[in-house]
Image (cartoon, rainbow, N blue to C red; front, top):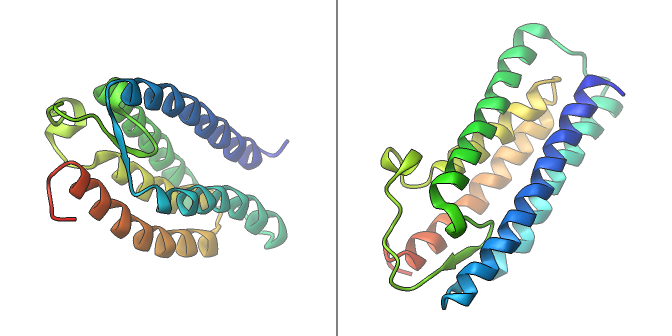
Length: 170
């Protein structure tokens, strides 16, 4: 199996682990009176992130993109850094982390881990990974398309999340 294909499959496996953690954490939140907000954009998010992985493989295979070490290795480092940041977020939020926007009433905002530094550090990881993963193997079309679509989705998601957390009007 080509190394880039293996990398994309490893990221896909990581996503499946995330979904398992999210399901468990959703049950925890709902058992404590949690309420989901903005569920309508969630299927779009799943489709977009699935499209990122498929686009990475398709563009490299059908576009015959070469591996350029000067770009590929730094992008791989960014992909790995994004994974570290993502799992730091998961650890900091504990059972409150989710792929959906679920808020348990009465719980204070988390202000530890990367949340000491940024309001939404997980989305930094998403943005970095979405641009860097395709570029590991020269997938510039996938990187551009995902980044543009993700910017639109994140605008919706951030408004929803900020409103749900009481940080901004709905």
